[in-house]
Length: 468
Image (cartoon, rainbow, N blue to C red; front, side, top):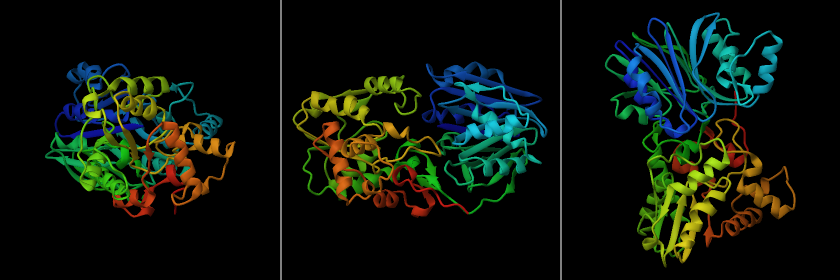
Protein backbone atom coordinates (compact mmCIF):
# COMPACT_ATOMS: atom_id res chain seq x y z
CA UNK A 1 0.00 0.00 0.00
CA UNK A 2 0.99 3.63 -0.39
CA UNK A 3 -0.21 7.04 0.73
CA UNK A 4 0.40 10.13 -1.40
CA UNK A 5 0.12 13.86 -0.66
CA UNK A 6 0.86 17.07 -2.55
CA UNK A 7 0.80 20.82 -1.88
CA UNK A 8 0.89 23.95 -4.04
CA UNK A 9 1.14 27.36 -2.35
CA UNK A 10 1.91 30.97 -3.07
CA UNK A 11 4.25 30.66 -0.11
CA UNK A 12 6.54 27.87 1.09
CA UNK A 13 4.79 24.47 1.05
CA UNK A 14 7.23 22.31 2.98
CA UNK A 15 5.57 22.45 6.42
CA UNK A 16 2.25 21.29 4.98
CA UNK A 17 3.98 18.66 2.86
CA UNK A 18 5.97 17.28 5.80
CA UNK A 19 3.03 16.97 8.19
CA UNK A 20 0.50 16.07 5.51
CA UNK A 21 2.34 12.99 4.32
CA UNK A 22 3.12 11.96 7.90
CA UNK A 23 -0.64 11.38 8.33
CA UNK A 24 -0.28 8.55 5.79
CA UNK A 25 2.12 6.51 7.92
CA UNK A 26 -0.55 3.85 8.51
CA UNK A 27 -0.33 2.96 4.80
CA UNK A 28 3.35 2.04 4.61
CA UNK A 29 6.37 1.00 6.64
CA UNK A 30 9.27 0.74 4.21
CA UNK A 31 10.02 4.01 2.42
CA UNK A 32 9.16 7.67 2.59
CA UNK A 33 9.92 10.23 -0.07
CA UNK A 34 9.41 13.92 -0.84
CA UNK A 35 10.10 16.07 -3.89
CA UNK A 36 9.95 19.86 -3.84
CA UNK A 37 10.27 22.21 -6.81
CA UNK A 38 11.56 25.74 -6.40
CA UNK A 39 14.11 26.79 -9.00
CA UNK A 40 15.09 23.14 -9.30
CA UNK A 41 13.92 19.76 -8.02
CA UNK A 42 15.01 18.58 -4.60
CA UNK A 43 14.21 14.96 -3.86
CA UNK A 44 14.73 12.90 -0.70
CA UNK A 45 14.03 9.20 -0.12
CA UNK A 46 14.67 7.36 3.16
CA UNK A 47 14.10 3.89 4.52
CA UNK A 48 11.64 4.22 7.42
CA UNK A 49 11.42 0.52 8.34
CA UNK A 50 13.29 1.09 11.62
CA UNK A 51 12.25 4.65 12.44
CA UNK A 52 9.40 7.10 12.07
CA UNK A 53 8.95 9.29 9.01
CA UNK A 54 9.32 12.50 11.04
CA UNK A 55 12.69 11.56 12.48
CA UNK A 56 14.15 10.49 9.13
CA UNK A 57 12.99 13.60 7.25
CA UNK A 58 13.35 16.27 9.92
CA UNK A 59 16.69 17.63 8.63
CA UNK A 60 15.39 17.63 5.04
CA UNK A 61 12.29 19.49 6.17
CA UNK A 62 14.40 22.20 7.82
CA UNK A 63 16.70 22.63 4.83
CA UNK A 64 14.37 22.52 1.80
CA UNK A 65 12.06 25.30 0.59
CA UNK A 66 9.68 25.54 -2.33
CA UNK A 67 6.19 26.51 -3.40
CA UNK A 68 5.06 23.06 -4.56
CA UNK A 69 5.86 19.49 -3.66
CA UNK A 70 4.67 15.89 -3.54
CA UNK A 71 5.35 13.11 -1.06
CA UNK A 72 4.73 9.41 -0.48
CA UNK A 73 4.86 6.75 2.23
CA UNK A 74 4.91 3.19 0.93
CA UNK A 75 5.42 -0.42 1.96
CA UNK A 76 7.07 -1.48 -1.29
CA UNK A 77 9.35 0.63 -3.51
CA UNK A 78 11.34 3.85 -3.35
CA UNK A 79 9.56 6.98 -4.57
CA UNK A 80 9.34 9.73 -5.88
CA UNK A 81 10.80 8.91 -9.28
CA UNK A 82 12.45 11.69 -11.31
CA UNK A 83 12.22 11.61 -15.09
CA UNK A 84 13.68 14.08 -17.59
CA UNK A 85 10.95 13.34 -20.11
CA UNK A 86 9.93 14.53 -23.55
CA UNK A 87 7.48 16.81 -21.72
CA UNK A 88 10.20 18.26 -19.53
CA UNK A 89 11.44 17.05 -16.14
CA UNK A 90 8.94 15.81 -13.57
CA UNK A 91 8.69 13.81 -10.36
CA UNK A 92 5.99 11.22 -9.79
CA UNK A 93 4.48 9.29 -6.87
CA UNK A 94 1.95 6.49 -7.29
CA UNK A 95 -0.44 4.34 -5.24
CA UNK A 96 -1.96 1.10 -6.47
CA UNK A 97 -1.05 -2.27 -7.91
CA UNK A 98 -0.12 -3.14 -11.51
CA UNK A 99 -0.87 -6.81 -12.19
CA UNK A 100 0.54 -6.94 -15.72
CA UNK A 101 3.79 -5.20 -14.76
CA UNK A 102 6.06 -7.86 -16.30
CA UNK A 103 4.33 -7.72 -19.70
CA UNK A 104 4.41 -3.91 -19.78
CA UNK A 105 8.12 -3.82 -18.92
CA UNK A 106 8.91 -6.32 -21.67
CA UNK A 107 6.89 -4.29 -24.17
CA UNK A 108 8.77 -1.08 -23.36
CA UNK A 109 12.15 -2.82 -23.45
CA UNK A 110 11.38 -4.01 -26.98
CA UNK A 111 10.75 -0.37 -27.92
CA UNK A 112 14.18 0.58 -26.63
CA UNK A 113 13.01 2.10 -23.35
CA UNK A 114 15.45 1.51 -20.49
CA UNK A 115 14.91 1.36 -16.73
CA UNK A 116 17.27 2.49 -14.00
CA UNK A 117 15.31 1.96 -10.77
CA UNK A 118 15.29 -1.66 -9.62
CA UNK A 119 13.29 -2.69 -6.53
CA UNK A 120 13.52 -6.22 -5.16
CA UNK A 121 14.96 -7.58 -8.42
CA UNK A 122 12.26 -6.01 -10.59
CA UNK A 123 11.51 -2.66 -12.20
CA UNK A 124 10.21 0.03 -9.87
CA UNK A 125 6.46 0.41 -10.47
CA UNK A 126 6.49 4.21 -10.35
CA UNK A 127 9.28 4.32 -12.95
CA UNK A 128 7.23 1.99 -15.14
CA UNK A 129 4.21 4.30 -14.80
CA UNK A 130 6.39 7.33 -15.64
CA UNK A 131 7.80 5.60 -18.75
CA UNK A 132 4.30 4.59 -19.89
CA UNK A 133 3.10 8.17 -19.52
CA UNK A 134 6.08 9.34 -21.52
CA UNK A 135 4.76 7.34 -24.50
CA UNK A 136 1.80 9.72 -24.87
CA UNK A 137 1.51 12.89 -26.93
CA UNK A 138 1.20 14.97 -23.76
CA UNK A 139 1.14 14.37 -20.03
CA UNK A 140 -2.64 14.11 -20.05
CA UNK A 141 -2.67 11.83 -23.09
CA UNK A 142 0.09 9.74 -21.51
CA UNK A 143 -1.83 9.32 -18.25
CA UNK A 144 -4.97 8.26 -20.12
CA UNK A 145 -3.06 5.77 -22.26
CA UNK A 146 -1.33 4.41 -19.15
CA UNK A 147 -4.74 3.90 -17.50
CA UNK A 148 -5.88 1.90 -20.53
CA UNK A 149 -2.77 -0.31 -20.54
CA UNK A 150 -2.52 -1.41 -16.93
CA UNK A 151 -4.39 -4.23 -15.25
CA UNK A 152 -4.95 -3.22 -11.66
CA UNK A 153 -5.01 0.32 -10.34
CA UNK A 154 -2.93 3.48 -10.19
CA UNK A 155 -3.58 6.89 -8.68
CA UNK A 156 -0.74 9.37 -9.04
CA UNK A 157 0.70 12.84 -8.51
CA UNK A 158 3.09 14.45 -11.00
CA UNK A 159 5.14 17.51 -10.04
CA UNK A 160 6.54 19.77 -12.75
CA UNK A 161 6.99 23.46 -13.50
CA UNK A 162 3.27 23.81 -14.24
CA UNK A 163 2.20 22.56 -10.80
CA UNK A 164 0.87 19.21 -9.57
CA UNK A 165 -1.14 16.92 -11.82
CA UNK A 166 -3.42 14.70 -9.74
CA UNK A 167 -5.01 11.69 -11.44
CA UNK A 168 -7.28 9.19 -9.73
CA UNK A 169 -7.31 5.57 -10.82
CA UNK A 170 -9.74 5.08 -13.72
CA UNK A 171 -11.96 2.71 -11.73
CA UNK A 172 -11.53 4.55 -8.46
CA UNK A 173 -10.07 1.80 -6.30
CA UNK A 174 -7.92 4.35 -4.46
CA UNK A 175 -9.13 7.85 -3.47
CA UNK A 176 -7.75 11.34 -4.08
CA UNK A 177 -9.23 14.42 -2.42
CA UNK A 178 -8.53 18.15 -2.96
CA UNK A 179 -8.42 20.63 -0.07
CA UNK A 180 -7.98 24.41 0.16
CA UNK A 181 -6.66 26.82 2.78
CA UNK A 182 -6.33 30.48 1.80
CA UNK A 183 -3.56 30.60 -0.84
CA UNK A 184 -2.76 26.89 -0.66
CA UNK A 185 -4.18 23.79 -2.37
CA UNK A 186 -3.45 20.22 -1.32
CA UNK A 187 -4.28 16.76 -2.60
CA UNK A 188 -4.39 13.71 -0.34
CA UNK A 189 -5.20 10.02 -0.27
CA UNK A 190 -6.35 10.34 3.36
CA UNK A 191 -8.61 13.22 4.44
CA UNK A 192 -7.36 12.88 8.02
CA UNK A 193 -4.29 14.79 6.78
CA UNK A 194 -6.41 17.91 6.31
CA UNK A 195 -7.97 18.37 9.75
CA UNK A 196 -5.02 19.71 11.77
CA UNK A 197 -3.59 21.61 8.79
CA UNK A 198 -6.88 23.53 8.41
CA UNK A 199 -7.60 22.42 4.85
CA UNK A 200 -11.24 22.36 3.79
CA UNK A 201 -12.30 19.60 1.42
CA UNK A 202 -13.46 21.09 -1.88
CA UNK A 203 -13.48 18.07 -4.17
CA UNK A 204 -13.38 14.28 -4.19
CA UNK A 205 -11.81 13.35 -7.52
CA UNK A 206 -13.92 11.03 -9.65
CA UNK A 207 -12.40 7.85 -11.10
CA UNK A 208 -10.28 8.71 -14.13
CA UNK A 209 -10.41 12.44 -13.37
CA UNK A 210 -7.28 14.55 -13.86
CA UNK A 211 -6.74 18.04 -12.42
CA UNK A 212 -3.84 20.47 -12.33
CA UNK A 213 -3.12 22.33 -9.11
CA UNK A 214 -0.99 25.47 -9.29
CA UNK A 215 -0.56 28.82 -7.58
CA UNK A 216 -3.59 30.20 -9.40
CA UNK A 217 -6.00 27.45 -8.43
CA UNK A 218 -7.36 24.15 -9.73
CA UNK A 219 -7.74 23.47 -13.46
CA UNK A 220 -9.87 20.54 -14.70
CA UNK A 221 -7.95 18.58 -17.32
CA UNK A 222 -10.11 15.48 -17.82
CA UNK A 223 -13.54 14.65 -16.46
CA UNK A 224 -14.21 11.44 -14.59
CA UNK A 225 -15.59 8.45 -16.46
CA UNK A 226 -18.71 7.78 -14.39
CA UNK A 227 -17.40 4.45 -13.05
CA UNK A 228 -16.71 3.94 -9.36
CA UNK A 229 -15.33 0.78 -7.79
CA UNK A 230 -13.64 2.05 -4.62
CA UNK A 231 -12.10 -0.58 -2.34
CA UNK A 232 -14.56 -1.40 0.46
CA UNK A 233 -11.65 -2.50 2.67
CA UNK A 234 -10.74 1.18 3.13
CA UNK A 235 -13.68 1.57 5.49
CA UNK A 236 -13.27 -1.82 7.15
CA UNK A 237 -9.55 -1.66 7.87
CA UNK A 238 -6.92 0.00 5.68
CA UNK A 239 -8.14 3.60 5.98
CA UNK A 240 -7.57 5.80 9.02
CA UNK A 241 -10.61 6.22 11.32
CA UNK A 242 -10.70 10.00 10.92
CA UNK A 243 -10.65 9.79 7.11
CA UNK A 244 -13.63 9.92 4.77
CA UNK A 245 -13.92 8.23 1.40
CA UNK A 246 -16.56 9.41 -1.06
CA UNK A 247 -17.68 11.64 1.83
CA UNK A 248 -18.32 8.69 4.19
CA UNK A 249 -16.31 8.55 7.43
CA UNK A 250 -14.47 5.31 8.23
CA UNK A 251 -15.08 5.36 12.00
CA UNK A 252 -18.83 5.71 11.52
CA UNK A 253 -18.87 2.82 9.04
CA UNK A 254 -16.96 0.64 11.49
CA UNK A 255 -19.47 1.37 14.23
CA UNK A 256 -22.26 0.41 11.83
CA UNK A 257 -20.40 -2.83 11.03
CA UNK A 258 -20.34 -3.66 14.74
CA UNK A 259 -24.05 -2.96 15.06
CA UNK A 260 -24.76 -5.31 12.15
CA UNK A 261 -22.73 -8.06 13.82
CA UNK A 262 -24.61 -7.64 17.09
CA UNK A 263 -28.01 -7.79 15.38
CA UNK A 264 -27.18 -11.31 14.16
CA UNK A 265 -25.91 -12.38 17.59
CA UNK A 266 -29.10 -12.56 19.64
CA UNK A 267 -28.22 -16.04 20.94
CA UNK A 268 -24.80 -15.13 22.37
CA UNK A 269 -24.43 -14.50 26.09
CA UNK A 270 -21.34 -12.46 26.92
CA UNK A 271 -19.95 -10.46 29.80
CA UNK A 272 -18.09 -7.89 27.75
CA UNK A 273 -17.26 -6.74 24.22
CA UNK A 274 -13.71 -5.96 23.10
CA UNK A 275 -11.91 -4.94 19.94
CA UNK A 276 -8.48 -5.99 18.70
CA UNK A 277 -6.51 -2.71 18.78
CA UNK A 278 -6.54 -0.52 16.89
CA UNK A 279 -8.68 -1.50 13.93
CA UNK A 280 -11.21 -3.62 15.82
CA UNK A 281 -12.06 -0.97 18.40
CA UNK A 282 -14.71 0.94 16.44
CA UNK A 283 -16.34 -2.30 15.31
CA UNK A 284 -16.51 -3.39 18.96
CA UNK A 285 -17.95 -0.04 20.06
CA UNK A 286 -20.73 -0.46 17.51
CA UNK A 287 -21.36 -4.01 18.72
CA UNK A 288 -21.53 -2.82 22.32
CA UNK A 289 -23.92 0.02 21.48
CA UNK A 290 -26.30 -2.34 19.69
CA UNK A 291 -26.07 -5.28 22.12
CA UNK A 292 -26.06 -3.12 25.29
CA UNK A 293 -23.16 -5.24 26.57
CA UNK A 294 -20.28 -3.33 28.22
CA UNK A 295 -17.28 -2.39 26.10
CA UNK A 296 -13.97 -2.99 27.86
CA UNK A 297 -10.29 -3.17 26.93
CA UNK A 298 -8.83 -6.58 27.84
CA UNK A 299 -6.15 -6.00 25.20
CA UNK A 300 -4.25 -2.73 24.92
CA UNK A 301 -1.73 -1.70 22.32
CA UNK A 302 1.65 -0.44 23.40
CA UNK A 303 1.68 2.37 20.86
CA UNK A 304 5.24 3.78 20.83
CA UNK A 305 7.34 2.04 18.22
CA UNK A 306 4.69 -0.41 16.99
CA UNK A 307 2.76 0.21 13.81
CA UNK A 308 0.36 -2.05 11.99
CA UNK A 309 1.23 -5.72 11.81
CA UNK A 310 -0.49 -5.82 8.42
CA UNK A 311 1.72 -3.53 6.33
CA UNK A 312 5.31 -4.83 6.76
CA UNK A 313 6.55 -6.85 3.75
CA UNK A 314 7.59 -10.08 5.49
CA UNK A 315 5.58 -12.47 7.63
CA UNK A 316 8.36 -12.66 10.21
CA UNK A 317 8.15 -8.92 10.86
CA UNK A 318 4.34 -8.95 10.85
CA UNK A 319 4.27 -11.74 13.42
CA UNK A 320 6.85 -10.08 15.64
CA UNK A 321 4.87 -6.83 15.72
CA UNK A 322 1.62 -8.70 16.37
CA UNK A 323 3.16 -10.54 19.31
CA UNK A 324 4.82 -7.55 20.96
CA UNK A 325 2.34 -4.72 20.47
CA UNK A 326 -0.69 -6.19 22.33
CA UNK A 327 -0.65 -6.56 26.11
CA UNK A 328 -3.40 -8.56 27.83
CA UNK A 329 -5.01 -7.41 31.09
CA UNK A 330 -5.70 -10.56 33.10
CA UNK A 331 -7.89 -8.78 35.65
CA UNK A 332 -10.43 -7.96 32.93
CA UNK A 333 -10.20 -11.28 31.05
CA UNK A 334 -10.26 -13.91 33.80
CA UNK A 335 -13.54 -15.81 34.09
CA UNK A 336 -15.38 -13.75 31.48
CA UNK A 337 -17.24 -14.60 28.27
CA UNK A 338 -15.81 -12.18 25.71
CA UNK A 339 -16.92 -11.04 22.25
CA UNK A 340 -13.81 -10.09 20.27
CA UNK A 341 -14.35 -7.85 17.22
CA UNK A 342 -11.65 -7.59 14.59
CA UNK A 343 -11.56 -6.03 11.14
CA UNK A 344 -10.98 -9.29 9.25
CA UNK A 345 -9.30 -12.67 9.24
CA UNK A 346 -6.62 -12.95 6.57
CA UNK A 347 -4.28 -15.83 7.43
CA UNK A 348 -5.66 -16.34 10.93
CA UNK A 349 -2.28 -17.14 12.49
CA UNK A 350 -1.84 -13.75 14.20
CA UNK A 351 -5.37 -13.83 15.59
CA UNK A 352 -4.88 -17.37 16.89
CA UNK A 353 -1.34 -17.13 18.23
CA UNK A 354 -1.09 -13.54 19.42
CA UNK A 355 -4.65 -12.57 20.33
CA UNK A 356 -6.94 -15.52 21.09
CA UNK A 357 -4.18 -17.38 22.91
CA UNK A 358 -3.66 -14.41 25.21
CA UNK A 359 -7.33 -14.57 26.21
CA UNK A 360 -7.08 -18.27 27.07
CA UNK A 361 -3.79 -17.79 28.91
CA UNK A 362 -5.47 -15.15 31.07
CA UNK A 363 -8.39 -17.39 31.98
CA UNK A 364 -11.17 -16.37 29.60
CA UNK A 365 -14.29 -18.51 29.97
CA UNK A 366 -15.44 -18.12 26.33
CA UNK A 367 -14.04 -16.29 23.29
CA UNK A 368 -16.48 -15.33 20.51
CA UNK A 369 -14.72 -13.85 17.46
CA UNK A 370 -16.63 -11.49 15.15
CA UNK A 371 -14.81 -10.21 12.02
CA UNK A 372 -16.32 -7.03 10.60
CA UNK A 373 -16.18 -8.22 7.00
CA UNK A 374 -17.07 -11.48 5.22
CA UNK A 375 -14.51 -14.27 4.75
CA UNK A 376 -11.68 -13.15 2.48
CA UNK A 377 -11.77 -15.59 -0.44
CA UNK A 378 -9.55 -14.01 -3.12
CA UNK A 379 -6.22 -12.17 -3.08
CA UNK A 380 -6.47 -8.49 -4.00
CA UNK A 381 -5.65 -7.59 -7.61
CA UNK A 382 -6.01 -3.84 -7.29
CA UNK A 383 -4.70 -2.39 -4.01
CA UNK A 384 -2.81 -5.21 -2.25
CA UNK A 385 -5.48 -5.29 0.46
CA UNK A 386 -5.11 -9.06 0.87
CA UNK A 387 -2.16 -11.34 0.33
CA UNK A 388 -1.52 -14.49 -1.68
CA UNK A 389 -4.37 -16.93 -2.23
CA UNK A 390 -2.67 -19.91 -0.56
CA UNK A 391 -2.20 -17.97 2.69
CA UNK A 392 -5.88 -17.13 3.21
CA UNK A 393 -7.54 -18.91 6.12
CA UNK A 394 -10.56 -19.67 3.94
CA UNK A 395 -8.44 -21.44 1.32
CA UNK A 396 -6.71 -23.51 3.98
CA UNK A 397 -10.13 -24.54 5.26
CA UNK A 398 -11.41 -25.42 1.78
CA UNK A 399 -8.24 -27.36 1.02
CA UNK A 400 -8.76 -29.40 4.16
CA UNK A 401 -12.47 -29.97 3.51
CA UNK A 402 -12.05 -30.91 -0.16
CA UNK A 403 -8.72 -32.69 0.21
CA UNK A 404 -7.22 -30.51 -2.52
CA UNK A 405 -7.20 -27.02 -3.99
CA UNK A 406 -10.27 -26.25 -6.08
CA UNK A 407 -10.83 -23.45 -8.59
CA UNK A 408 -14.59 -23.13 -8.22
CA UNK A 409 -15.36 -21.95 -4.67
CA UNK A 410 -18.82 -20.58 -5.43
CA UNK A 411 -20.47 -22.99 -2.97
CA UNK A 412 -18.45 -21.39 -0.19
CA UNK A 413 -19.52 -17.81 -0.94
CA UNK A 414 -23.16 -18.00 0.19
CA UNK A 415 -23.38 -17.55 3.96
CA UNK A 416 -26.53 -19.69 4.00
CA UNK A 417 -24.93 -22.70 2.27
CA UNK A 418 -23.79 -25.88 3.97
CA UNK A 419 -20.29 -25.52 2.48
CA UNK A 420 -19.93 -21.98 3.90
CA UNK A 421 -20.96 -23.18 7.37
CA UNK A 422 -18.52 -26.08 7.13
CA UNK A 423 -15.72 -23.68 6.19
CA UNK A 424 -16.47 -21.32 9.08
CA UNK A 425 -16.61 -24.24 11.52
CA UNK A 426 -13.18 -25.41 10.30
CA UNK A 427 -11.69 -21.92 10.80
CA UNK A 428 -13.27 -21.67 14.27
CA UNK A 429 -11.68 -24.96 15.29
CA UNK A 430 -8.35 -23.90 13.85
CA UNK A 431 -8.48 -20.61 15.77
CA UNK A 432 -9.56 -22.47 18.91
CA UNK A 433 -12.45 -20.09 19.63
CA UNK A 434 -15.84 -20.75 21.18
CA UNK A 435 -17.77 -19.36 18.21
CA UNK A 436 -16.96 -17.56 14.97
CA UNK A 437 -19.37 -15.53 12.85
CA UNK A 438 -18.42 -13.34 9.90
CA UNK A 439 -20.17 -10.26 8.61
CA UNK A 440 -22.37 -10.83 5.57
CA UNK A 441 -21.76 -9.07 2.27
CA UNK A 442 -25.16 -7.35 2.41
CA UNK A 443 -24.59 -6.06 5.95
CA UNK A 444 -21.12 -4.77 5.08
CA UNK A 445 -22.41 -2.95 2.01
CA UNK A 446 -25.24 -1.47 4.07
CA UNK A 447 -22.73 -0.30 6.70
CA UNK A 448 -20.61 1.46 4.07
CA UNK A 449 -23.67 3.19 2.65
CA UNK A 450 -22.83 3.11 -1.05
CA UNK A 451 -24.65 1.05 -3.70
CA UNK A 452 -23.06 -2.36 -4.15
CA UNK A 453 -22.13 -1.60 -7.76
CA UNK A 454 -19.98 1.34 -6.60
CA UNK A 455 -17.76 -0.85 -4.40
CA UNK A 456 -14.95 -3.25 -5.23
CA UNK A 457 -15.82 -6.49 -3.41
CA UNK A 458 -13.37 -8.69 -5.29
CA UNK A 459 -11.62 -10.01 -2.15
CA UNK A 460 -14.92 -11.48 -0.94
CA UNK A 461 -16.80 -12.37 -4.12
CA UNK A 462 -14.18 -12.77 -6.87
CA UNK A 463 -16.34 -10.55 -9.08
CA UNK A 464 -14.45 -8.14 -11.32
CA UNK A 465 -15.75 -4.56 -11.30
CA UNK A 466 -17.84 -3.67 -14.31
CA UNK A 467 -16.10 -1.50 -16.88
CA UNK A 468 -17.46 0.66 -19.67
